[in-house]
Amino acid sequence: MSDLINVEVVLATPPKQVLIALRVPQGSTAAEVIAASGVEGQFPDLRPAELAVGVWGRLVERDHVVGDGDRVEIYRPLLIEPREARRQLARAGRTMGPTARGSADSAKGTD
Image (cartoon, rainbow, N blue to C red; front, side, top):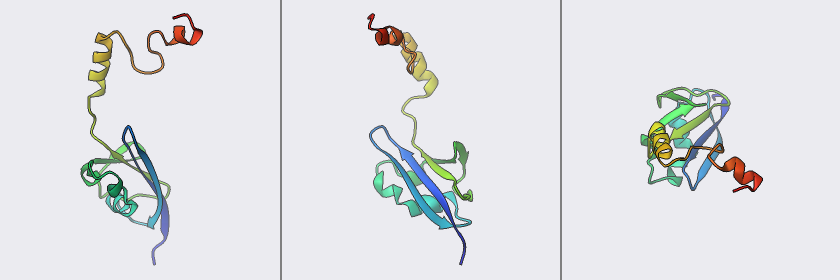
């Protein structure tokens, strides 16, 4: 019998995020871990089996063998490319994140 390792599977959408911890046989691939997690049943519209996969923020193929403690991440498609989102915000006179114009003034109550 093979040794079991601890892994996590994560997938996030704006309304819902899941982190599923599980134990799988040593030598399991990212695809096998995703299948064992049952995450596909929680996001049927996204079809996780067809999305890009990473381990700790690094893209990997689905046949990548995971190690003990790895976090398998399923990446949903971007609705807009980040650079284009920044361009659109700049055209509107806004920025991304907590440094948005007016945020310091708002915190001081000087708006």
